Image (cartoon, rainbow, N blue to C red; front, top):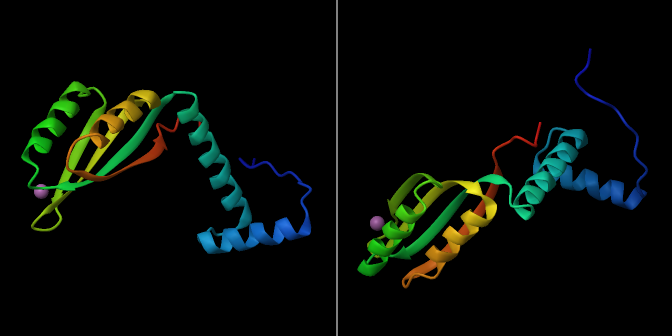
Length: 138
Ligand code: NI
């Protein structure tokens, strides 16, 4: 018995052609795989919009010489110790540090943690990558 369900969709030819191009550019093996990826991506967005339990990474680029930043960054992570899963620090150049913090928790709590980090003096760039604990994706 197949674990797949087939269904037919009605789509404009021009949009169908764009779907094929998007799927090809993404490297997906076929349009079905690409559509499944799109659906899951939307489900992850809904998890974040609905403040569900989420998984994410916070990527930061900051000034190595801003010493107060290093202490403040540690303080913020200790305040959110229940959300921080692991941290990887890279000495990117003589002057710059890059750091990735893997986080898990309610989406709003992750955003608050990221916002606090973003506000620190010497923080040059911060990006949040939103992922999922996977509960709603299967
Ligand atoms: Ni460093």
